[in-house]
Amino acid sequence: MALDFSDDRRMSRQAMKAELLDAETEFQLARAWRDHRDEAALHRLITAYMRLAISMAGKFRRYGAPMNDLIQEAGLGLMKAADKFDPERGVRFSTYAVWWIRASIQDYVMRNWSMVRTGSTSSQKSLFFNLRRVQAKFEREAMARGEELDRHQLREQIAREVGVPLHDVEMMEGRLSGSDFSLNAMQSQDEDGREWIDALEDENAAQGAEVEQAHDTAQLRDWLIESMKVLSDRERFIVRERKLREDPRTLESLGEELGLSKERIRQVEAAAFAKMRKNLESQSREVLHFLA
Image (cartoon, rainbow, N blue to C red):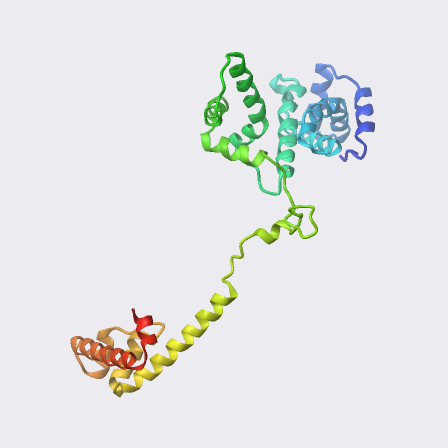
């Protein structure tokens, strides 16, 4: 069944004119929908209680959402309630529907409060809709006693009252402290003002640092190639297999291939490194800076 929420004022007028259902009529309509999926019965039930949905939607206008959208969400909550209502439990439909209507509106408000997700757990939802009220209550009580609560004391009292961890209160305060702003908004009205996005730190490495690193890498590669020229073929092979491969070989595997013991391979490797270092040190003081 489709409901038209295109005009909240027209919808409100229609809702106020809707019939008031007695308990027996409500019971018969709910059972007809549950047992026979009678859409006419559902339509009559929903129409009769739209005034309740609209009334509850109006209580959430202070969160800045369009009234038409709030009514739509309230209507969806009302329809969910009708779909899940069991008339034989002896509870009036309005009593049962209140929870579903409120939950639907609250979910909508939280989804649209900020681009950053405001909260999804029951404690976060409770904080979102009760933080300001509870905070104002404690501030009034402290003022009546002639006391002044600091921010930490106030947060602790709110956490105890709502039954949530202190860090949840601190997090929600930050999220409710302001609305979203565009990064392309100007920081000031001056002609030479810049956008907020220009103040963000560049996560990429500075171009100068990249150039310097590339230069150093190329220099080290040239020095390495030059130093390996003083090695014998066997020493060069061992150094290459042990240090220049992506998957370095073990002393044991090289020993098996060359017919030497692991200890002898280690000795040859150490001697090769000593030759290379001596060659590098003889080339330039700049090399000593890299080796330090």
